[in-house]
Image 1 (cartoon, rainbow, N blue to C red):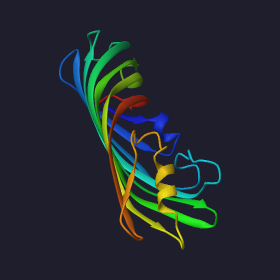
Image 2 (cartoon, rainbow, N blue to C red; image 1 turned 90 degrees about the vertical axis):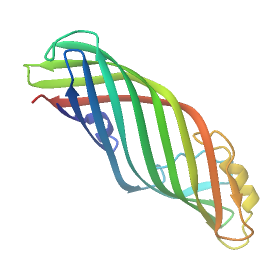
Image 3 (tube, rainbow, N blue to C red; image 1 turned 180 degrees about the horizontal axis):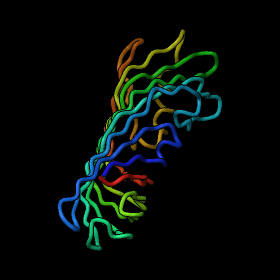
Length: 206
């Protein structure tokens, strides 16, 4: 069964899945995700203090998910099939973000990686023994991530002031430490959080 995630496509991300049924109630599903580089001030979360501005941001993502499903109702073409699935998900973001403060630019470039191990619950509907509507209602798990890269600044930077603001980025979960005595600096942060997942996929059986 091949599927496309129409929910992620609405946000500019291509996501394709292939599901292989092992027997009447168990299956494997492999998903590949890709988002081309997109620019714009709204491509990154801006949670800065007064006086700071997000002037530029770019990001692209590549990733995948492997899920093992248990359907609570038997039959490959059963019209309504609720399922519970264990899943592993891994994504890599390449990003570049520029902040402005008092005429000085601060640019961070690097990678954000995240791995999630968790459970999903959803329902798949089969239409005319040929088409499927696959709704993952909720998925959640333990997420392990890392942010790393380089930071460059304009003239007379207040690097400590910028570092203080970077600590407010919510998905990091802890403070980003910027290392070095002059530009370009380096930074790295590891974090653990809760990963949340949902999807709406349209598929074809074969």
